[in-house]
Length: 357
Image (cartoon, one colour):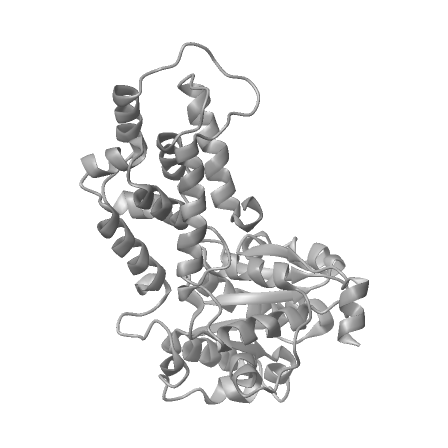
C-alpha cells in the first residue's frame, strides 16, 4: 500500500510515529495520524483542517486529555493499531473512489472520518468537523478555484473550447491532449511510475512543476504523451481533468523575430493566452534553453518572463532536459530551479523495449 503514498502522505506516517513516541505510546492510533496530518502543513489535509479552524496545539491537548501519556518511551518501529490500519485501508478506497492513482494526505483524512469510531473521529466531532463537512471541503479544494479563475469550468471537454482566441498557442505549440483524444499519439509502453509521479506533482499546491531528467532518447516526451492520454480518458485526479497539455516550440517563437523585443512580445502574448484559458499545462522540451543554452536569442528574457508567472501559480509547466544540461544551466538559476521538482526518467527495461519495438 505505501508504494501508492505521496511523499507528504509518507511523511504523515513518520510524523504520526513521532507523536506516538512523544506521548510515550507504544502504538500508532488514529489520534497520532490526525496529529501527523496537521504537522504536514503543505498537505491538502492540513489546509482543509486549517479552514475548519483545527490546530495541532488544540488537537494535541485533546489527545492528552482523552488518552493521556504513556509510561515509557518506545524504541524502534511502533506498530499501528487495528483501527489505524483500517484508516489506511479506507484511504486507499477513498483514493480509488475519486479516480486517483495515489494516496495523498486528503485520502488519509477521509479515511479517518470514514472509520468514525477512533479517537481522531471523536476529536474532529468535538470541533464540529463531521465526515460530510470534511468531504465537501476536500472536494471543494480539489476542484475549486485553487489554480483557476472564478467562473471557469473545472473539468471536462469545455475547458479546451472556453478560450475565444488561442491562435499563438496553436501556431507555436502542439496540443497533446487533443492529439490523444483524436488517437494521433502512439501508445506509451510502461512509464506508469513516471506518469503517476507527474500527476502527484501537478496536483500539489506548491512546487508543482515537474522537470523530466534523462538521457537523450530515453522517452521523456513519451511520458508527457502518456499523461495526455490519461487526461483524454479521464484517468487522472480531478484537478487535472480537462487540462490541455501544449508543447511549446521555443525555436519557432524565436524564428523570424527580427527586432529586439519581438520574441519577448510573442512570449508575453502566449502567456496571456495561457492565463486567460486557465486549463493549460505547458510542456517545454529542452528546458535549459530558457536560461541561455543553445545560443537562442532572447532565451534569458524568456526565463525572466516565465519565472514570475511560475512563482504566482499562474503557469504550470512540465520541463524536460538531460542531467548534464540541468546541472550546467538550471542549477545556476536558483530562482528557476526552485520552481521545479525533478522526475528521473531512466532507459526502458528490456521487456518494455521489446514491446516498444
